[in-house]
Image 1 (cartoon, rainbow, N blue to C red):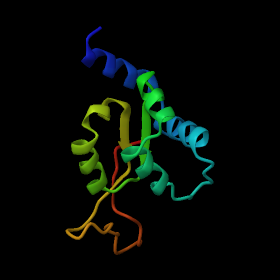
Image 2: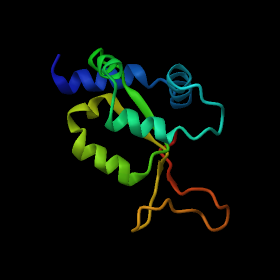
Image 3: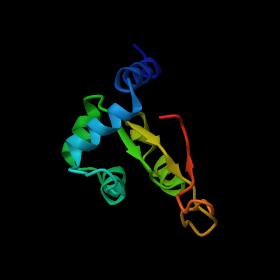
Image 4: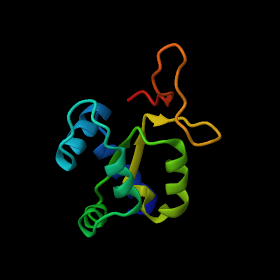
Length: 117
């Protein structure tokens, strides 16, 4: 099986239901209550993974990063490119020119790229 097919196969097997996958991964890696901001944990995992986390990636595990800023995701695409096949990003937060998260003026909620998950 070539690398592309392995990536697609792994992703397809991992992402059965976005909500279930995110809940399972967050519950297994972070004791996160609903509404808890885990972005510090996810940024650390993204840019400074532990040996155990790298071993999980080596074993074809995909980690779903939920709600990171678009600027952090772009940085990961450059700095962590060799690990990209083990990452999925959902509910990406949009930022302005200064890197601050944009908010919806009507609701005050962060503006996110809705990927349907």
